[in-house]
Image (cartoon, each protein chain N blue to C red):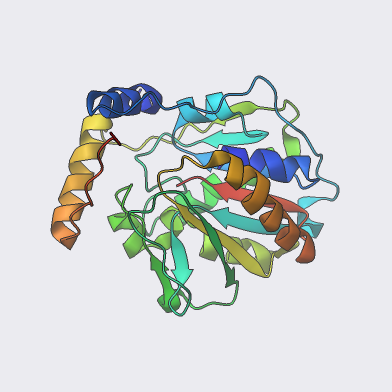
Length: 111
Length: 162
């Protein structure tokens, strides 16, 4: 998405990107970026927490107006409230796939 | 601090499986366009990569590889007609409340309250999945997205990275 944001910005439309992969955003440098330190799948908040979703969105739009440093990432300080890490990401993904019975297709390197 | 080092973990995982190192896109600088009008007068477009489409549109492949297509979802689409096909993140909460990844209702709230001038007539929605064709994305897909944005009179775009 950072790549897309860059080209849209170059094309004359200002952009702001919300993401939860801070290190990837730091490499790609979308013009304006908001980091939400939540597990993937929750970049805009928790389910049914309308107030939190609205705060994240307003913080983001505020930055669209106020940002002045191209490529800067603004870190929102909302806390997920429970520990999460790469291992829990992979575990949850496997659990979801099992629950929905969607076995992933084989993904192997080309010889 | 729960910040996950996605780049390192993805590199470890896929190189461990025998894939060549992924060439991450990196830049030292960023382009810049200033917002021309106050937010309350601006038309804001939503762009999502969470694999969301309207039920009568061509579905995204939840295991997409190099899907450079996008759907235009009219902003008056009822919730019940939206679908999410994306298996590279845990989408179970998003299926309960799409606003977790797709702040459609919240943007409609902001439009109603006058916080933004308007929400652009259609949401731009991508699936992408694992993406190796970045040149094609940049040279073909995004210029088409830009054309749609300009056609809709978008003054700014909010991108949510899935």
